[in-house]
Length: 179
Image 1 (cartoon, helix red, strand yellow):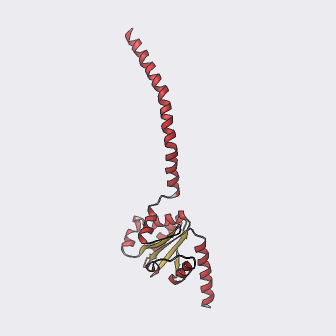
Image 2 (image 1 turned 90 degrees about the horizontal axis):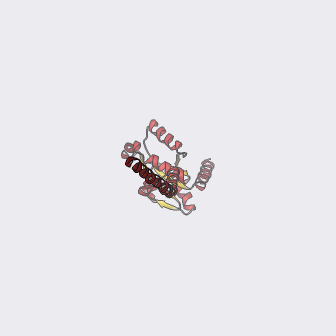
């Protein structure tokens, strides 16, 4: 019977790993139910879900795909998020949020590793994912870069006629004042 269950879990986890752009591994130890629900809810708002995984199973499935994680990354109680790039960055932002600073200090929550864009990352590099801008921020930055020169050009082109109008008005005011 356990072989059937192991095969089912392996198949489900293999589908999850195959359909994702990146993976985020973190410790999830000794949380109270409200803390657990708060973290899972915040992650769900970002469109990702947490999967508690068996370390040996994940290590074997990743090795089959040619991915070797650090041995410390898959020790102890490990949770995993498999998501697209946007979801992974959002999850890293949630897990490194100042709201959960006390949980990280207590060792209840902590990033262990990540696999993103074909690169294996340690804990520090996985935390750096939180510093990446999300898609909306990148779009806004790109829009600013594109519209900045056009706005400057419009200002310059508008300055020529308004300058001429101010010169004519000054000349008219001078002639009216001189009579």
